[in-house]
Length: 253
Image 1 (spheres, rainbow, N blue to C red):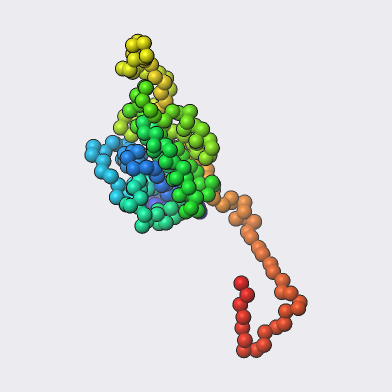
Image 2 (cartoon, one colour; image 1 turned 30 degrees about the vertical axis):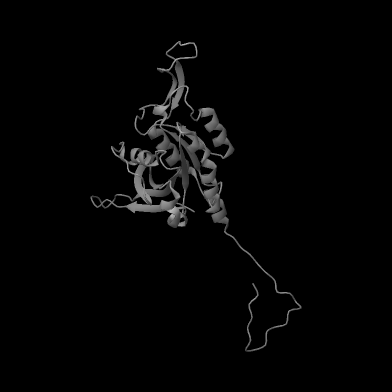
C-alpha cells in the first residue's frame, strides 16, 4: 500500500507551488507498561508526560519530519498492551500499516520474551516482511548492574532474526546526541570493590524518528517499474465446451 498524499496551498502568492506531504501509518506495539505511550509523546510532542495513564483502546499522534526537503507525516498509533482493551479493534488497528515499532522494556525481560507473540499477531493480520520493522528498547536510563535485564546482544540477535532495526532509548531522559561508553554505578562486585562500570548505549529519540521517516520515504510496497509495465492476463475457452442455450446462464469459478 502506498502512502497517502496531502497538498497544501499558500494563498499569499499565486505562483507558490503545492507542498507535498506523504503520510504514513506507524503502529507501536508491545506489552503493557513498556513505555509505548511515553515514547509516542516524546516522538510527537517532544516532552515526557507527567502522569501517563494506561492506554485504553488506541491513542493517535502525529509528527511531520523533513527528509531532504520532503515533508513526511508520521501517524503514530499507540495501542493498549492488554488484550482486554484491544481485542475488539485489532483488525482495524492493523489495517493500512506502513511500519511497525516493537517496544520492550530493557529492565523487564518478560516484555522481551513477549515479542514473538507480537510478531505472530502481525503475521495473523497479514503484515508481511516487506513492512519496515523497528525494535525499540525503552527505559535504558533505568538499567542497573547485577539485575536481570535485556542485554543489547540479545536484542541484536532478535532484531537480526526478524529483519528489524534496533534502537535503545529513554523517553524520560533523552540524549541530545547518541552515546556509547561506560558509566559509574553504585553496585559493587563480589569482593566488595566498587563502584562498578557499566557499558551502555542510548540512541536519541530524534534519531529514531528520523530513521523511521527516512526508511518510509525510500520504501515502496509496489515497485514503480511494475506499475509502468502494467499487468495483463488472458484466458482461453476449451473447444469442447458447448455454447449455452438461449435463456440459460451459468457461472464457473
